[in-house]
Image (cartoon, rainbow, N blue to C red; front, side, top):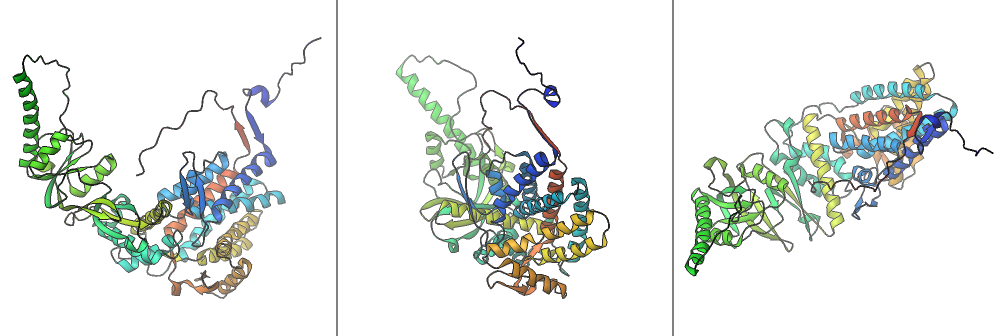
Length: 545
């Protein structure tokens, strides 16, 4: 009797054992769509100013309490390959514009959900893709029409202009606090804005989070805020030159190994004295070069510190190398590797360095007013760490919005007015199309309703009433009518001053449509058997910045 050893056949015979292979509409396409729908359901409830917060605890046990979609999808370790595409689209939006990641993920999920209905009706995915591509191109054309007149030129140094464009981005993260936060962010951005606003560098606006106090205690400091005390007793310096040493201020061990034979006590005393004299010589050389502040990137030795005090040098220690780089940028200093006499060109300059106490924490404030576009810091105060983290995300979004408006300052109506107008015009466009893709275009138009619907639902309003009254207003030609969330009625956005940047919407819709089409193009999933062996952890990342 021959043992029943089944010969694998078909695709099983071709691939290694342990692989998984899903194909066809039911297994691959609809499963993919389902995974993406799950992801967008998570982010959707956080859309808009009344969005709910999520508590995400990542694999390192760090707790995030936030409604910032970019953070949420980053920290959820999404395994499903199709949902990962949406995550990547959200990340791309976050890196390109810095705001609107939620819109991207939620809108792509909605497009896929509607595509599923079309597939169940019997359309082929490629017809849906053609329809969606036509629709997104048309939507981008319509978006150009909706741009507010006269908004293409703006003065990026005018605080009110900046605040009006930044409000909606900040309000969607911290609703109710935007009137406190926006002026702070705008002021910080305008301070560091270079001559050519296109070169605005987001990294020049720093955030320092200090526990205690409340949001109204937050301030903008022109310069840097270091969360450490000065080493030594000298706590403030004005108009000082700065020397930066990366390798630390300490006696260095020599490169070569050597043995010293000491015969009697005098030699031992002299040996200790020469070391002292050597350190003193180096510190004196630094002091003679005109530097009054020494910044060290590593430990500061006891003996070196003693001589620094004697020569009235203020010593700061900055352990993070990123922070050290920023410090060099603020002061215009050149970081030196070895402790030696600096050239006059390598010295930086600060207006004042002082140690101050904010809410029980000692911080060093480095001010540099003359430097022009150096660095400015928003000092945030709040009661808990998670509140501060969330405030920091709101500030980041505001700063990124500022960068985006420096590149392209056109604005479109916010509060879902743009989306309803897009939905209405695309619906009309779909009636003109012949062929099967008209259904896809109509569904694409319907997907835009998700945004007003979600905004209304998150605010606890009746979504169906609101959408129908929005449509009625828009049909009678009021293209700028959006939802007033607090009163639960439809209002003209220009009276409420809710504007979104055109560039944010443009990229969000583009990325969402691209992601949706990418997922729809997949018809088979072939997963190899995961490699064996112990699971390796990903290498640890850089520090927070």
